[in-house]
Length: 537
Image 1 (cartoon, one colour):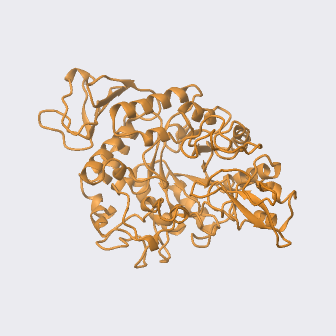
Image 2 (tube, one colour):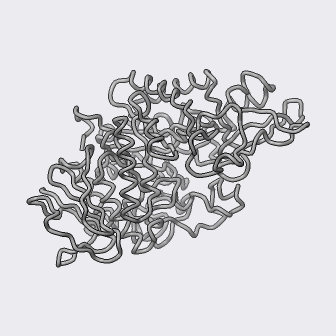
Image 3 (cartoon, rainbow, N blue to C red):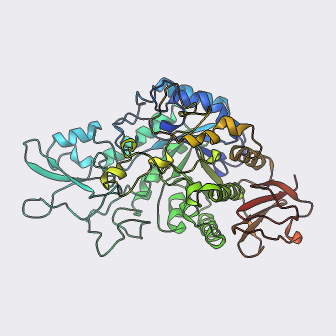
């Protein structure tokens, strides 16, 4: 792989980036919540894993209505996480270890506590203060009905009515997420100028890039049509949707690209864009827009050879048209952990091990969500009183939300909080059975998930076939996913639950097994839910 000081292809084309969920990585001050000082103390672990960069979820001042994705100040650090000096020290330490740093940018909405929104509430309809957000009059003679039928991603409606300064019910404001997250109006030049200044603030502090939250959501149809009868209320956006994946959003990213390109080094953007198809995703990655985007069709693919191959083919074909690399991902802080999605227990773990080798062998870059290298499952038995995701509350508990994939990771010891911090508790409780999954326990176990990840990432750096480039599919039989990469590499994944024979003539000349996600049968067959790398090493 391209290292931090390499001068060939841009580093981000084949980087493996480790997602740090700041609240749940490491707690230095003992309040039960992860922080920047905790992350700094654990950076050697991240470096030893073999990744190229870290992505930090939001650490900005925030009321924490949505775990920091409701930002009240974009140019500072929330006291619960530390200070700007802590951030500068983290960047300095990471760079010293050869790790780049990507920070989360939340442009679709601010916190309702942001000074701009407070000013909007204090101002009148039609004021410049309200023009930064999406305020509309309600329907009906008294304006008592929301402007349209749009729904919040967290459940319930997407509009909240305000009380005007004179005390009477007034306009409604749009929030595609929680009411505490009012949507900005990206047709407003003041909004655009402000975010370019925010980009510059962090670029000048040395960050290497930005993950763009809800990158597909900034532009809205000014006509504000109802969804009913025309558009799916949820799921990937259909082309022309009134508030998802609208073409107008691309002008914003062209402006951002001009900003990032004005700084030295290879700064990068990665988009969180839930769109209908890889072809629509590729539009975000044209040469003058963003650099990379998560390939969520790969994450969403079922444990099936045809489904996974289709996700890979569609993504690579669409991205080739704009010259962008694929960016593979299996888990993140918004979806159930893939050990659980793939069947949970031993079956889910075997499949997750195989999926990791599949992902790291594919052309392009990849993201690792903290804890997946430990084989952590989704925590499904959290007590209701511990849950914090707004989805849980806005659906009356009908949807559990995302807390189960955000539980702090276990570092050491036999009892919670497993070395997460000096406190006896963590902000979300950890299962006691995680004593078997701690970093301490897995680090010396040659058969552990952590050892598999370290070995895979080490080989990914060393083998010239891996990283950016192309693949060629190899027809190996039903339920087998196989592809070659030059020079002299073959990956085979058995998606079935029974062993499979592999014809010796499929193997590259002189190649042998360099890594497998599980034990290989003595007769050379590949067991079920197992991936094998063959190479000339």
